[in-house]
Structures are given as structure tokens and as C-alpha cells.
Amino acid sequence: MSNAESPASGLSVVQDGRVLRVTITNSKRKNAINYDTMVALGDAFVGAAQDGSVRVIVLTGEGDDFCTGADLSGVVSEAQRGITPEMTMDAANRLVKAIVDAPVPVIARIRGAAAGIGVALAVAADLTYATEDAYLLLAFVNIGLMPDGGAAAMIAAAAGRGLAARMALLGERLPITEAVACGVITGVLSEAELDATVEGAAAKLAAGPRRAIELTKRALNQATLTALDTALATEKTGQAELLQSPDFLEGATAMLTKRKPVFAE
Image (cartoon, rainbow, N blue to C red; front, side):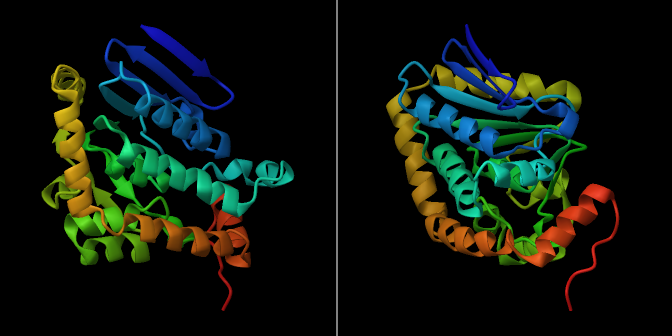
């Protein structure tokens, strides 16, 4: 077993035999991720794609939540470091594409909240298992932004435009039981069952025929995610604009100060 952990990037990457375990380790912020974490996550998936010893990747979050989206508390410091909205979107798009394009299956293990970019990470995985109290939330509109990471496109591909519009335009939570019923994720489990199910799936995939699994994953993606690249390009343009807007400044400030936002008329 090999281990690489970087507290600065909020990420732990551990190879356990043929299984690569990637864990977001910012539980104090409910595993919200900043620019550095997105880059490090992308690096982990790109690296795994080039490592023939990795046969399956398990992605999860430390503690009670999977990932609650972008860490808004670091927006100012990132701007001071010269990180532009375009750079942020490039990092997010690279990460999602690295998950989708990985030649090995990716299993997402979900507890609690998967929100914002966390939804994209959850639905970009090939198999997604979650506990009964988990939920998906595209809350971008609540802070003056649009969904990114291809989440809306991937949800629409799985469950249709109606559900994607409900989540993206109204910013409503999608209970995990409904996500399973709509075909957005693989399965909902009790807390006691989650790890055993994830580990069972990982063990089966790790022992399977690598090339056959790779080509099967590629065929599934080509059949269902034909609009993903276009969606990511559209999101980069739109989100880069919105990240510099007064409505986002108001929405982010309201969220951080726990008040209701008042957007421009």
C-alpha cells in the first residue's frame, strides 16, 4: 500500500493493491474544494490513467459529507494569487473529464451532501453508491452562478431535462432515494452496507479483464455523454462571466454571512 497525502491540497491518495483510493480531506469545511484541490484531484485521475497497476478508483470524502462544492471562503485569496475564473473553470473541467475518460472504472462513495461541483464528481463516476441520508444539490443559482462540471448535462442524460431543470433552476435538493429511482446514481444503502458494497464492487472490478472493462466504459460514455464536451465549453464561458458579476459577489457574501441574498433587479 502506498500513500500520498497533502494537507495543503485537502486530498489523500492511497494505492491499495489494484485499488486507488482518493479522499477529499477537508471535513471541517464539509469537503468543500478550492482551486488547489481541484488541480490535485485532476492530477490523481490523470496519473491513474497512466498507471497500469491501477484497476479501479474509489472516490470519497472524509467524515459525514462527500463534497459540498467550491470553498467560497478562499475566493479572495485565490484572486490575490492570480487565479482567474477561466483558470478555475479549466481545473474543474479537466477534473470531470479525467474521471469520465479514465480507462478504469471510478466508484463514488457518498455520505451526506454532494453539492455544487460535488454533484458533478458523483455523477461523473461509473458507479455511485450512497447512504440513505445523502442528497444531491445544484445550488449554484442561489449564489448567482450556473451549474458547472457538466453536472446538469450528465443528470439530463441519465434522467431527462425535467429533473435537471428542477435541480439547476430551482436549486432544490434531490434526495438520494429519488436519484436512484431516476437512474442518476447506482444504489442507496444503509450506513452499515455502504462500505461492504463499495469494497465488493471494487474487488470485482480490480480482478476483472482490464481492457474489456475499459472498452465497455468507453462505449457507455459514447452512448450517453455525447453532449458533455459542449456543455463544459458552454459552462466555462458562462461561469467565467458570472464569477465576476455583482450577483455572485452578493450571493457568496450572503452565504458566508448566513443571510438571504438580494440580487440586482
